[in-house]
Figure 1 (cartoon, rainbow, N blue to C red):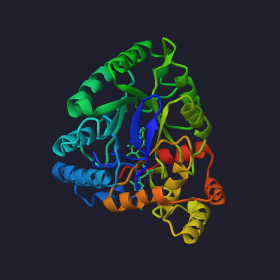
Figure 2 (cartoon, protein in one colour):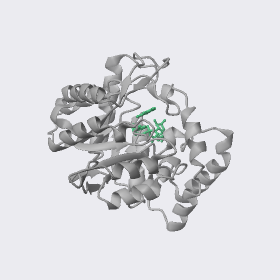
Figure 3 (cartoon, helix red, strand yellow):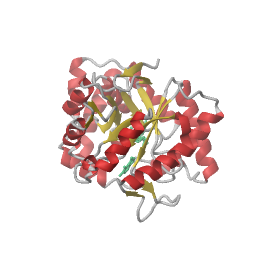
Length: 332
Ligand SMILES: NC(=O)C1=CN([C@@H]2O[C@H](COP(=O)(O)OP(=O)(O)OC[C@H]3O[C@@H](n4cnc5c(N)ncnc54)[C@H](O)[C@@H]3O)[C@@H](O)[C@H]2O)C=CC1
Ligand SMILES: Cc1ncc2c(c1O)C(=O)OC2
């Protein structure tokens, strides 16, 4: 059974599991075994049909949060067509998208550049218009895609003023985080205020059994009322049986032991450990096939003992190492 939560500042009811379309909207992605999951079906009609079947399965399971981005190929287009095609009312589904990256892979699995980052006012205005054309009134939340301290986006007064204006027009405003300094970036973002009120309603961050370092900052943001969306819960597939890296052998053995003990799959255990964090409002499934989605959904029924949770949380690695490995994942 799906569970639901209210995001405090956003005053929105969401399902605790959401569906992310990063692996569905374009031929190439970095998740383990993505090429195998796509099974060579890259023409746009086949990709759309596949995405629709994933969205139907998600809806059937009670999923009501959908995550896309301007840079996820045709993900916004597919999602908008599906929502309209199924006659879903604007209030019945919660949709979050992101601006800041442009998709540049030209519908190829391999590309010299897959996406180009630009956090300027011009990019915001351009992509906001594009997202609006594709998603219209379905769009609830617009996030800065991978805000970092170095990029200067959190100090860009023109961008922040525009985001505030969009917020005044009823759009929820968020940021997504990536890399070893997620916590610092979030703390900086929490300080941004207009007339005493925080700009950001929602943060989307990476937290999984291998990379837990943002946990305390996410707990703090949650206490301040922000909605917390967790991405990369399976470390892009590295927390599944697909991970054959030699360096993962010990961690794999521990997951196998817990799996034997409980009868649950690696992915259900890893996602259940996220759902067990009181600050985690929504966990995004990055499933690329209906089987993966079904398996991910089992996490909602997993009850972990405190001792099992502690053993799972022992899988954490150094953030620098985690993000170096992440940056070396191959587009496939
Ligand atoms: N804001 C940002 O910068 C980012 C946002 N995201 C969002 O988060 C969503 C989820 O992130 P992901 O990294 O895709 O999620 P994830 O870490 O859950 O990995 C999903 C992948 O794990 C593997 N997998 C899942 N279940 C499996 C099973 N039962 N057996 C074998 N393999 C299995 C598949 O390769 C699948 O594509 C994305 O779709 C996107 O919406 C993801 C990355 C960055
Ligand atoms: C830089 C980068 N690489 C991969 C991915 C994203 C990203 O921003 C994203 O949002 O979903 C997958």
